[in-house]
Image (tube, rainbow, N blue to C red; front, side, top):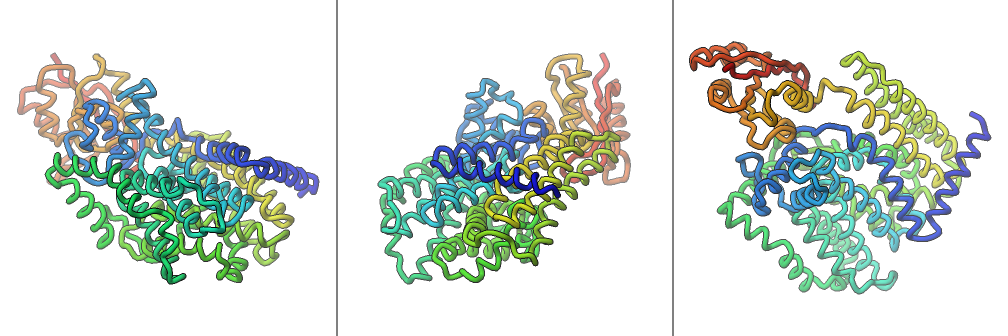
Length: 567
């Protein structure tokens, strides 16, 4: 490869680092731009996903419609799983946006995007007194580019905001732990307990769990809990109760305790003791998933590992391991596993990698070069072209823009590989560009271009196109995805075949939708059963439209028929 190109890349990367290291404001500006470059591709154009995002967004939408800020409901069903915090944020932003309950899905995603941005900035802040400015900056850059954070930033649910609250609490804990070695701000204990309180309202015990495991590990290792006094636990617990307890009391009263039965009994304990919702994974699941979901930071770990092992007793390394390992190991032994569960440990992982990259000095061990090369340019090629080929096979469309972005990402990855052989820290800023180009190919171009898998959006668009009246009442049989409810009406009737036929027999502007490929228990197509039910009710109806596709959840082929009653 042309040496001039490598030199230019190094100069650009060095200029970015020099600018960011000149002051905290500049660092925050660079980190903000890095986060937006990696998280915005696809943010506005990917349709609502199922099922978590659809349920979260629909429950927040219903808060706006009803004005009930206590109960969390999906249609008529109580959502007794997660606390109310994310719904308040989503409903608040949707209201402030001017869209109100009719806000598009990207408005409900804004808290996640802001949570991801806050998590990146807080990673920089949290690690500053522990590992230094350059190391903290590089750690935050790596986090901004990770595949996992980008996914969570594009989904209207809890985990990006949870990462922000956990990182804020950990930053305050680190400052209390370091004590005289750092400047303890007067408000440090306030930051700690406010983060705990908000974390409780976002996802229950997860923020306190991560912080508690870290603090316990440090206490056991040093055989002293004296540093915890700086956090003023008595006043702090009172503050947490003052902020979070009112809603927990209100929901307990209004649901007669059903919320805690659902959130603790089903949502938490079933995940610990069994594979809730069939999300089982063996021990080692997260260690394997790391190499995909922590890209492009993951290849750096291969380079950093020898230094980290040699310096495992260093205080900074030990502190970050206390943040990382207890939580990671706990989630590895829990039966239910999803890749984002260990996201609260990612700032510690990025801190360890950054610490090694800066302290190792120049150059790169030759024996790790091939691993680095595979990690940085092969991943974009595999993921990018897998997405491009899938769109071509399913939609018969060639995504030329995605091809260009994928090739550029892989080529730049090769440049970064060569640059890493000179100076490891200077490879990090360009890794953000590698990631951003890949996300443009996959998230901005390929994902929305795969129209077949966005059945709810296609069906909702078809209804708007052919309906003889605005916002018809709807019943749907054989398809009950939350994204369809979100895109149509809160009162959409998720019915069986008999219910859909009965619904269509009533007066008013109504449409019934039936999955023509689905069969009932007797092996009969439910579309045939639907027509038989209409005949029994002496209802004349006609099929006015049809949509074929697959939903991203389950990927089963469906052909949705749209029926209306004849006068």
